[in-house]
Length: 442
Image (cartoon, rainbow, N blue to C red; front, side, top):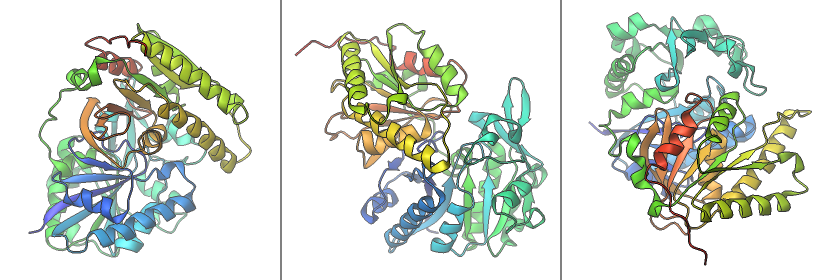
């Protein structure tokens, strides 16, 4: 039987938060995709950043990836499993992306919604998606995430969510439900009966539930059933079945370049990110540098110069600059204006990244979209190898050895809505465990 390769189209760079050792691809030309297919790891990620795009552009990017992937797969002795990964607590371009993937790479017998993400405290029971917080389970439509101005939703019951997002094209009654009882009893026969791109929602409370589910999926795939997945990261853990990561989370400081201090970039504005930032700023040897985005776009040059100068000064003293956008929530007349402003902020932050000290020991990027831009634009990476997690749900990648500025530098990809209030400070302490050396002036 052909080797299985899991191909993940990731709408921001955080989907690798439960696996390690694989490639992240920031480009999706045929040659780069073939590099992912030829890699020894059982899965790879294509970072499309589509959650930051309007729906039409997200569809165009997804289509381009799929068409190039179809070419890259020619002649490969692989059984591909395609996953549309989105983990912003049901926020993202569904069904836009799965529709395009089905058009370009189908036909599929079914597409599955598997949003359980255990590291983030999210489970699905009786087709209702919950977030575990403050000692209780909260239906996700009652959380801040459901009020997103672009990707908001009104229900945690997944069949109704599908009907809402497809505007009735797929009715709630037409959605196939795989409950916990089904999963734990085995669903191999049910999977074999699926056809015509049926929509299926999947319960899961533990990793063992998804292990059992993926075992049945692989058996059905061996019988020539073709499936597409829209999922969070925990499903990928079950597909990959990797051994423990080589570098323990508590030992990530051994990956720091030359023992030098690092830098933190915070672009995420969700309340959890702001609380984590506040805790970080209380840590020793942290130098806060606020970027007042109210001055954009007219004073971008002066803002950049001030931030770069402050970061250089902190680094030379062996301290860590924490560079963060001002926390005041802005209002915009429409979605297009919001996106345009977001692009201006990102452009400034990426100019900052391109001008950070050459002797930087490590970099933390806070926020999914911010992290994608850091990898693809600020650092200009084509691919990066995933080292593993420094906290549950928080990944570390390493720049290639031939990188022009930051060879072998570890970069932390920190989603906006993951971790407790001390999580960012914990990451800083783990990277700084050996202490930071001041940098001698030229």
